Length: 161
Image (cartoon, rainbow, N blue to C red; front, side, top):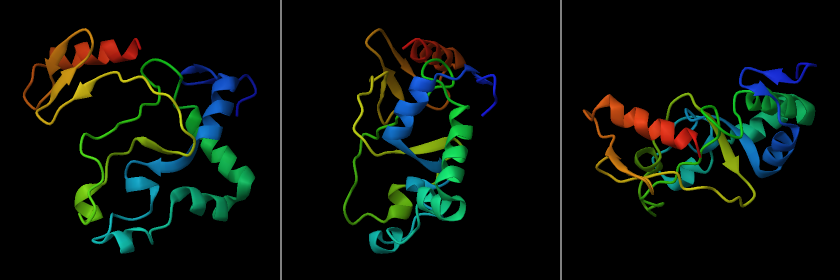
């Protein structure tokens, strides 16, 4: 970490970093479905054999190297605002018997963390299967083809939470 305790999103909040480190383990990016290496398998049994990014980092770099990698990525998030961590919960929970490749598709290059300790979260918005985003204050469509202003309104609202 830089000696002046600054980062691209501002001054590092050491209390936030310590609390965060006890609640989550590093899982790479959302390109690693479930924080595991490789693409989701065709069966649950095969999918459980995919190694977790956390375990591979510990094995390759040891405790100090792992903490360094985790801290380096923590510089990219903040407790509030545009660069903060969010937890996405799907409407459809796990379905036994559905192949992992269909149920857990690979995501984008966003940082991914695995929750290891229960935490409280604020529900910022509920988005249904048709792309209707509901907040306590308003409802807008963010479905494909929806006006760009709807996305900006929802983003501004969520950044204030």
